[in-house]
Image (cartoon, rainbow, N blue to C red):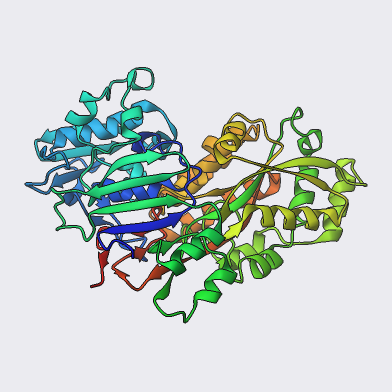
Length: 505
């Protein structure tokens, strides 16, 4: 019989490479980090517009209107028992920025963080209209116990990228104020969290939370049915359907902001054909997107035109119909001829083990392989460990990388920046500054229609090059045993709220 004091979550966490909030760069750590750390502000599940107080009891514009002023709630403590002060906020945000890892890119518009008094902090952006509040909701904006982190080698100095030594400690422990604290992480094993005795939001419902690595959906299905797991995150649409109406198990659903995509390089050493824009576009117009959604995801998905998820920044299903890629085999063949490859070409398609949206990457890769073969393009499937794949992709050594995007927070600029701040570099695309400027101008616009028009133009420019092909944006479908209540799914970037989860007696 399952231990009612322990919440067991079955999840594919094979991509986890760090549990340091300042170095989080993959898909699954967000759930554990959001559970172990608090941010200044947050969003409620399903509402990705209204910013709510969290560690900050209030937030207003600074007197000069150039930044935001955050007043901390009094009397709060970290899991260590240390009080939460403005010094911790300044340290946490400066450390994250100075580590210069991927999370710092989400906060690239922050110009400085200043302590006003022990309980008040001002945060300024390069331009007063730069988005900040939505970004501060992300786990990358977690507030850390500065005394504990410093005692374990951490620093917020300008040279933190070279001198900070706290990551190794933070990979298996946490220094936050969330409902639970991380006590261990075993790669491809589990992440274990235990109740924070100083949690300011009330006593958490469980003594421990165990996020158990299960790469195979079949293993997750067996575990949820037997009661070995209380929650299963990566079931296939067919498995979800088989559980509907089953006694003792319910299905939770919500729209995600995630999507899966293919990134095509411009590196001649990795794939000579892809140096031709028409060859990349030929792949884009050969894929059966509707068939992938209907046959593989069971219809439980939508699709953005490009990197900006449906539901934010004016991205809608209608926009995808208007400017998104669609299967057009005749157009694909014309593009192949224009590229100088009338009979097609071959390339290696890299993808990770595991699944996305409940669908194994292997099945999606096979679907893509079959679709593009209809116009003579041959994809050699290259499955590999997610960490190895990320290393190759980040260093621009993949011809075609098939992966996912999980936004840190529902801020369209973060999605857009994934193109021009990181993605372009990884596919060796010398992106024009004026394309990036469209997104930056959109993020600063206070006029919704103008913002949506600028993001549309940005998307259209990205689409013209064919480097990034978005396949689908799934709905979360998670199986939860009836012995648990209070778990809320969210598309805000961290999957679920666990702080209110309690066992049903």
